Length: 192
Ligand code: GAR
Image 1 (cartoon, rainbow, N blue to C red):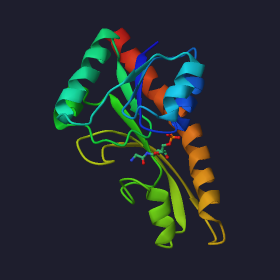
Image 2 (image 1 turned 90 degrees about the vertical axis):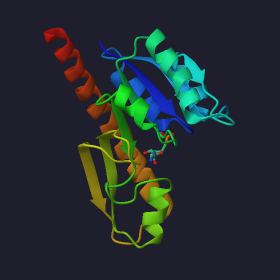
Image 3 (image 1 turned 30 degrees about the vertical axis):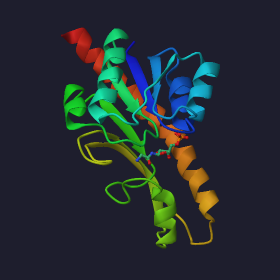
Image 4 (image 1 turned 180 degrees about the vertical axis):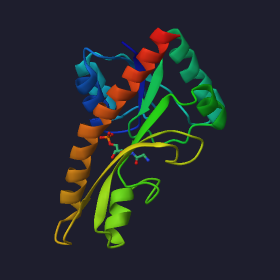
């Protein structure tokens, strides 16, 4: 059983899908959130996952990350799953956890990285939507892709309908990919 942390900034739908989907296989040992009012923190209380709020304002990013790092070390975290964490991790932090940070993104990367991806794609008249699960490198929503799932609309769907469909896919494929990833991590540890 691997020990993973989830980093989130907002609603926490993917956080909850991960905890529910991986329950009994891998252990979510902390939710790290950077917004005090993140609904994800409320979900974590309901799910029984400890939370750690890390304030980023008025200090260098590296200082906030060193607080996170202390917590990850204390909890002996094996891997990190970003779930709507709307901050770019520093190259040093990424290097420290190289190959052990996952992310889910609501587009078919490399198309539409960044925030508000679904709305921006919709407004641009895009017809192909989807979800990407990938390993995190130093870039914004970049790094080796583990899985993608796409769908095409006929142009009649509303933004809300498309968003719902994208989020449904996220909640299905992120736990699946995270579980496979953590299984592999566990297996490689057993061999070492
Ligand atoms: C999700 O759609 C996730 O893919 C996206 O934020 C949303 C968070 O929702 N992440 C990004 O855009 C990362 N660049 P949630 O808080 O309900 O999981």
